[in-house]
Image 1 (spheres, one colour):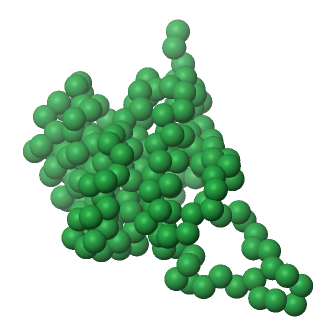
Image 2: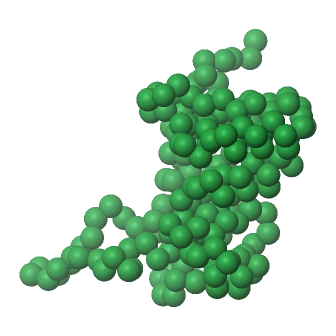
Length: 200
């Protein structure tokens, strides 16, 4: 996670080459139960599915998270289906509601079909109301904010890494470390605050 500003010597360009900007991009998908139980991370690595990253690097990554390789490191239908089958399904042990934003992949017919046909414990997909994710998304402030801040803090502590392969591995280890350090009580309180539910 780079800082918000680029510094350069007086009179020189501060421009960063496009190829250097996002070569090491990953996306961390955080999933948490309302009781504060953390589910495994889904880490989406930038690369070509079936390419060298998927076949040579991913098998060497630390155990624990589920890894996906996607050309822009963003969610798409294939990665979302992987999330439902490999992250969510093993964690379900009782009837559950999966709260999502309105990303088209979350609400596709394929998603509903997987939820209905493959997740046997009575899991239901419930999107948040349209155009309300900025105020209703339960994990944005209480979990995502602290997660990003702690990742940034860890990044500042790390030494310089040169190769894209090493950068990806360092980012993955950083995300795992921060996720493992996230307290379940913090998560539970953010759900209670966002959904206005409190234990009596």
